[in-house]
Amino acid sequence: MRNTELAPLYRSAIGFDRLFNLLESGQNQTNGGYPPYNVELVDDNHYRIAIAVAGFAEKDLDITTQDNLLIVRGSRAGEPAQRTYLYQGIAERNFERKFQLAEHVKIKGANLVNGLLYIDLERVVPENLKPRRIEIK
Image 1: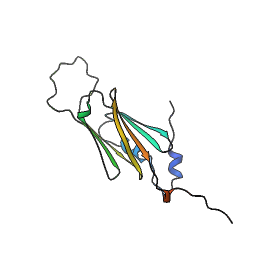
Image 2: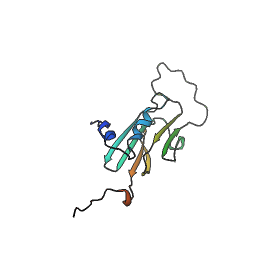
Image 3: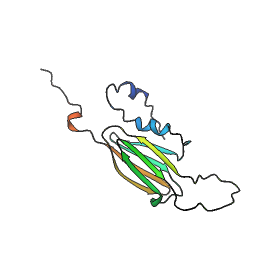
Image 4: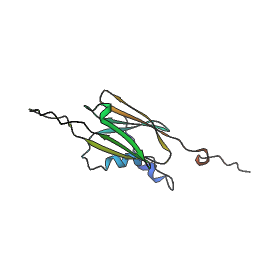
């Protein structure tokens, strides 16, 4: 496992959108860190968010985007079962998680596998905004 320090990227990103704002926004939620999630850098322009949603089915999850804001909601329909727990370590509450996406980041898809919701993202920068080499004459 490798963690990446993002502070140097912030210093050199003068005047440009910071793609890693999506990391910060998730950390500033008031829901106490539930559900936990990871943001993975797949390659230079592809990212994957993995959210632990054990106990939620596809029908219980809702993923929407609006104005570069990714919103993931989980809510169970019906009344919760009345159980007597000797110990309860698995949270069963509804949630809402928000991620602020940088400009030109698009959602490519989502899938639910073994209690993890994977959301794949791609950064698609238009040609006119990509760096170009200037010839010196």
